[in-house]
Length: 261
Length: 244
Image (cartoon, rainbow over all chains, first blue to last red; front, top):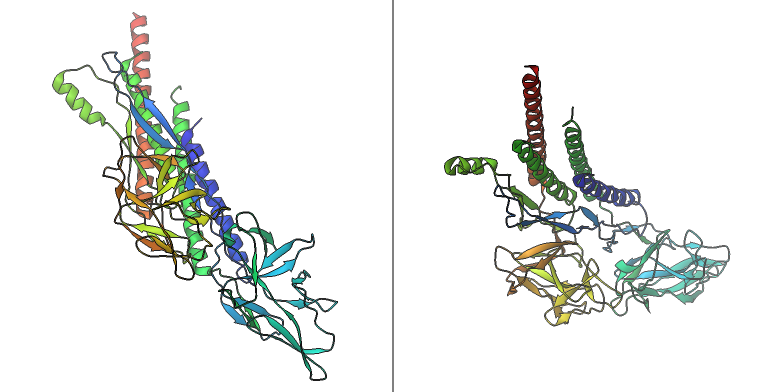
């Protein structure tokens, strides 16, 4: 019935999506390795109306075309892969990647997932795993009599046993992607490779421009609360202004109905 | 039917069209590099003066004209390597699915499965056709030359400009399509990597749009009242004439 109402409604829906994305970022401000998202928008198609005028002489005059935009839509919600701050934890099994790269984890379905969250745990069989129990690949088993674990910046894992001998137990490999933004988010800090992201390129940390491992640190989320707050205020006001447009359209409709008394 | 009623009805239509354009501007406050539309209708006063001067029969108001305001939006720092704003007059050239070209200033880049540089999924043109990149770790200089992480030159973004007033029409997707016979000119604008150009429906122009909203509503109301007065007058005329 009223075009402007639907146009303003598309604006409200866009701002709702914007607020959803901001809320999720804010909810994950303390999530290790979380990467914030951003909502992108683009305008919808334009409707061309040619208003063929009939002048007082009864002859059609030269019509003028008017282009009317039909609102806004989402152009995607890409992740923003800037690096979060490294926070010292002092925990042997906490690792952060300084630079590019993802840890590989084995998902329950057998697929490989990728994560920046390096808050590792030891599972019941001594394997290095994520807090959710997903195995870190390549699998590294910590001996039961291990006293200290050392992870070098290039990803070599060694342990000191209770008898004071040191042994190498594995090598952490990290993965990079041509287009990390194209990866699919699986929740639990894990992303999955897609056609858009490209194949994983595996290598040892520190080689070929990959990041290095910092043991005893975790990467905090890259969410900037001040930035999100500002975005939220703007989104809320934008939502409000679109609701005003709907109210105005409504009042106009009511006036139309009141033409006939 | 009385002509004044038709005129008022036409003015109401025009007000509705203004309402559509204002709503569309407000819906796109968060759309990167959106350019707001301004709608003008031939003013009633002008036409009245002309008609009084020439003694023409009053004419139904003409339609609206929509003009796009190409003023640059604010630049916002995002810190993302795949964001780039155009500082100055110019557009990125985009190849559309049907092979034709579009133009945009929304510098939200990504790469697709074929590793081509895209904006919102549409292929961006460089100086030698589409741009294929190794990965998203890129650096752009102010001329739009793209370097990879090792610092090797990959390609250069194609920036085009047009003579003003721009012979461009909106096509949705923050894209513009050139009208026939529009000539592409080289652009001297600078590229600012890690910046995004925001919509030019800013806080200030949002206020102007709010005022426009109120204005449209009142105009509509005025016309509504005009029709009602006409209706009343007709009614009175009928009753008085039939009383005798």
